[in-house]
Image (cartoon, rainbow, N blue to C red; front, side):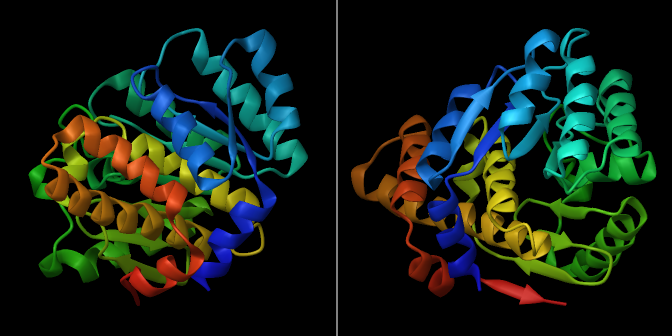
Length: 274
């Protein structure tokens, strides 16, 4: 099934509106192009709603919030709801500041979200009011491991059911859930945490998969998360072979998304259903 999800992205060439942060915006655009989609970045209130109207999906990333872009997030989310387009929220740094946490909670409450994707601390900050986020990284106490995997799956399922969207908790072990089903994904590589933007890129990638696979948002999310993980592994092999550092690794990651075939994704994804 994962192979079909990727094939659908290549065929549909989804246009994704990204209200994302200025730290990683170029990488977000490039990974969408590598996957077979196309990006538009617009956050000016007088421009952004029109852009949402011509796109297939909306990726909202709160990594560099400001007073100008927050109204655009809500206005574009409302427009996407009117059009029936998928909306993803990446609550970057939720729990690290009052503005981030309050904005993320309002977006969850007021928009019709298809998926919420973040690290374990960010998701807990929204779901439980936890404030252990370390900047934009997960607190070590929140990291998903084999010992707490079952509890994380139950938490993700409960939160997904409560908010009515797919919840993707990503990290060393990824947990993806809706209100009744859950999956763990064991792809990826530790060096992915040594580049800025692997999570931001993933959120855009998931949005493209949601647009291209509207009838199964849960499996679309699983496929996207597995795809970046598989490509992260391939990039790490290339990194060792060529003796380069983390900056080139980022390029290898995007290159491998471009080169990934549906058959490779189906073969190399390590997905466990609960």
